[in-house]
Image 1 (cartoon, helix red, strand yellow):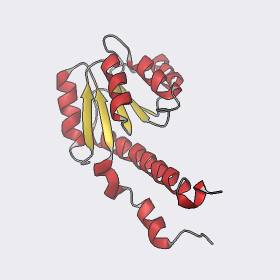
Image 2: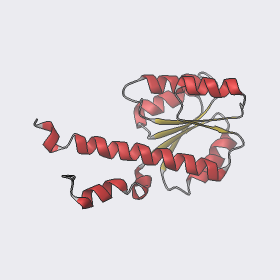
Image 3: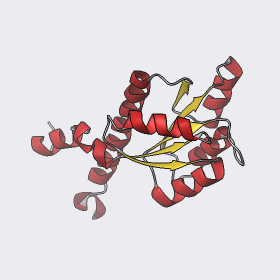
Image 4: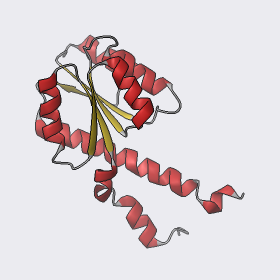
Length: 160
């Protein structure tokens, strides 16, 4: 039997209601791609921020602390592989969900994405339903983890 009151447990699991709180960073050097994916994400109602290259993406990750990053692979100044590796190797950002979005679709590209730490991989052209399903799934996990962390570090846990 759990010590957690049922209403708190149910509220913690109702993450769909929290999607508007979620922040998604969209990174692509192509303005048309940014606009298309932003339009798709409107259906989820989450907050969004954009970057147009890898260096700007890292600045936004540090500054805005997004819950999820949709990351193009081929970009100027720093590739998506490098950005993902940096996000996942930093203890402050390693729990940030990353979906790599790219026209690259060869097995070595998938392997490199996995090695860099990506949570998921989408090929261009992006299918709206597939994008929304994967984003929503990873945001649910991220929001549940944040709630669990908050419950675990609550007042009862700090004293003992």
